[in-house]
Image (cartoon, rainbow, N blue to C red; front, side):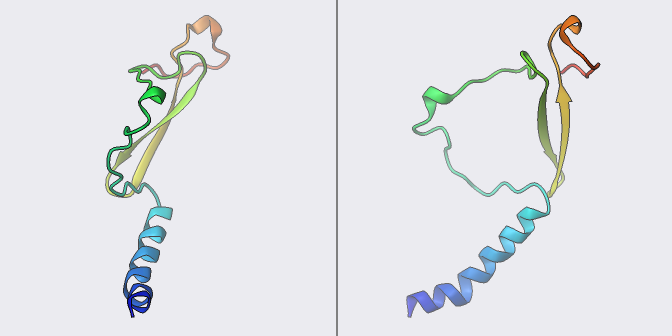
Length: 84
C-alpha cells in the first residue's frame, strides 16, 4: 500500500518541482552543505583573480543574472571586462 501511495501522491509533486527548476533558478532546501566538506572550502570576495570567471546571482523567484568578472591586472587581459 505504501509504494502505491508514493506513486500516486509524491511522484506528481516531485515531477512538477523538477519541471519548475528546469525553467530557471531553483534552490530547494539543502541542509548544511559544509558538513564533511570543510577541507574543500575556499572563500574569496573577489572573482576572476587568475582567469575570467562567470558568477551568477538569483533575483526574483525563478531568474538568474550571470556576469563575467576579471580582476587580473589590465595588462594580462585580452578583452576588457568589468571588475567586481
